[in-house]
Length: 454
Image 1 (spheres, helix red, strand yellow):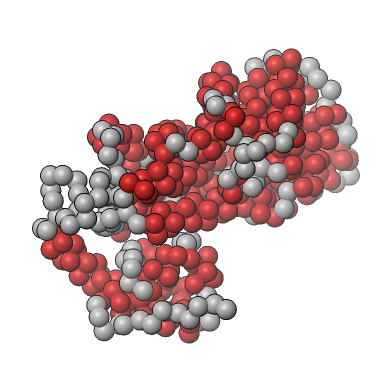
Image 2 (cartoon, one colour):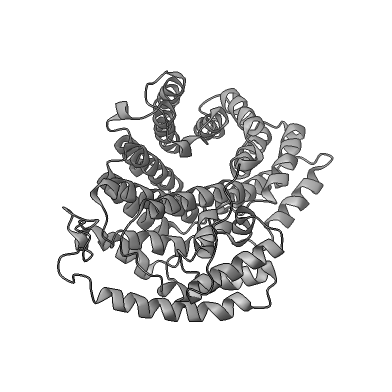
């Protein structure tokens, strides 16, 4: 049975009153915490913590809550009082804390960065937070309060945020989800400035690494490549500090894919091989993912033999039994994802005319058929590649049918990578002999691309 909601005490403080008011309006609109969280693009735990006055609501979130709940602006007006009160309380508390040792008065707990030079470690983050357009936060986020002590619930919230944003990214693409992640990045980075029990230290670094990794891939998908490089670099440092080999491998896989996309396949190979260091600590899916990154890099250089060898190593790794269980966030790398990723390497060889297209066609069909709606972006990209390969092979009718299915997904997704693949398909279609239905597909692609960046 679900636990009854916690009894609120709105008379205790402005924050408690705000939380009670939020619960009142949420229940009045017959929404669960999860349903409301999805509508305002935050985690369910954050809604719960605001309702119980364990977390302050930002002005931006208060405005979104008012809009979704149709309160007439009650929450946005009340939020200013909450912030002002919390600042006074924070100032008084700070006077009792040690200013020189990095410990919270009375806790005896070490700093999060015990054994790490704080200034050097955070240099990457500071640069990114200061100059990155993604993280040039508007004034409502500037007043985010650094926690006085890192708790397990803070770490859980960062992980939940990473999972939520990753889900949006897979379904809708990085351009849609990217704007929502900025405030969570600031809050996550603040954890690294707060005192933390030693037992939570690794978990805290790992959670921050995961969120920054997700944000980095969003930036990559939106072609904000400088942002992505900074976010990935910081995520990698946090993963190294946490000793999290799974996250480390995933981050280097992302860095390899970005390097390949940015026409630097040599760097892509380097990143993939860095990810494979101590591969005995990785799951089968993680090793396959990194070998696939190598294959895609080799394919971009036109190295047929090396590409095929890397694809074979990826297939062998994916099929091999392993005692290492993958983390939950690797669940996306299933048979459909593996087929699609390896197919992209074979696609380059087929289009270059140095390898038959059969393998790429078969794998792309498996990817398109295997991806669920939760991975609409991957399905769309694989379908566009499949349609293009059919057109390259003069199998025009099949290409048009596949393109039509891809366009159904593209309408849900905002991804610069998908848009570029669609432009390539459109150009190829314009060079294809006229057949029935070609004009209709071409017109749909034009409409899909309207309003997107060139």
